Image (tube, rainbow, N blue to C red; front, side, top):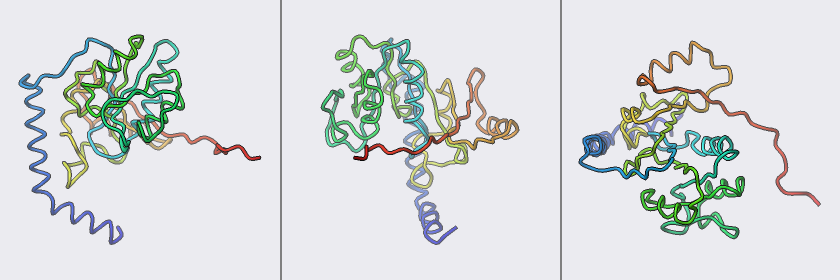
Length: 238
């Protein structure tokens, strides 16, 4: 461990009181939803939610693209994201002249790769869903990107991602750890996906991870890896 990493780790430990306070707030919030004191909107519409319990990249965008490729052959798909780092506010639906400044880098990537998919952004998913359905009533399904922690919407199917080597069961609340939600929230997912696994992951290693994750009866656990293609020039040479 280098000095910078050691300093950062030590500093985050000093922030433990703030992590405990944040964790208490999250636990109370989830309890209120679980008990029904806070209500989640049910749109009675096919909605798939992709997300994780920690901050940082666990492969949500590649998973969204995988689902688009899987479903778009038979269904008309829409995606709804927050639109991180965009320069606009509120709801926006991507069009022919839309830029990344208006909807964010990752939604723009979806829009560029899948022109037949309705790509929309909204900070509040509960507000964005009815607007997207109003603009595109032909949609068969909406994929919510990075929305597992948004309890305001009750998705019909939840996919929870956790990164190999950094499982949520070994993490702690922000800012001491990276958890933005309590790890017991995994109960809400129908599927748990362990991302960024080594290609040579053995059956015994998978079984060990599954024991650590402790899936509920009926929950499925899958393992994914990243396979990089051959690099190529995206700008044509003259």
